[in-house]
Length: 297
Image (cartoon, rainbow, N blue to C red; front, side):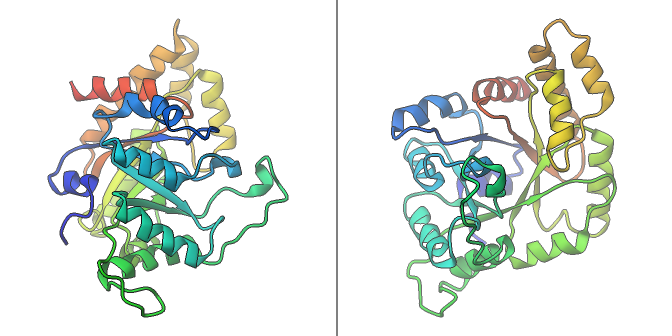
């Protein structure tokens, strides 16, 4: 398959990938968005644009992604099935590709009951794997699910989410996602190299790693307290005790957290099947940019 996006081309070229993340602002203003994300320009290979994260409204992820593309930043458009029916999602895929947004990450979306408008009605007309297969049909078969032709078809590089667990990946589930059209996976945070090595080995033994691209989630902590909070509140996250103790004993916890991230990136580079890292953190674009620059030296 011809490359669908700049990110896809870099993966085909065997580059070690750095993706990052930004949350669109609570502002009807282009400059506010660009000010937040500019530290990542020409540093990250692509930037995820979150879609109403935490079930709280922000600037549209599609709009923000288009703005990034128009400013030479390769966006990864996050699309949740929580907020749109299948027609709206298909329309967004066509419109995104027409304006240079070619990477998507298909997600379910956070539960509105945990957001700031808990009375919100969830759409969930289709699930995230159906969104994957729909996007795959639109690009490969050049048609909508109804059978109507799309000419020209959208160029779409399709992503899915995974949560590495302690030696308990579900290879059949991952293979199904690949068969449906997932080209790359971005994972939940992984802070334990042993867990990641075991996870990737199981996938390698099943022949999965040669079929797809795994970009492993990482991110800096604000403090040991925030690391503990992640352990207690984020699904699938396990920050090892030794990292928390290292943060607690350091004089500057933010700087120590940066060092930990850089060390883990260097370790992850050498794990078979790891094609890159995905650096996350709310309003941490600047520190993530610094981590990526240091890791590229």
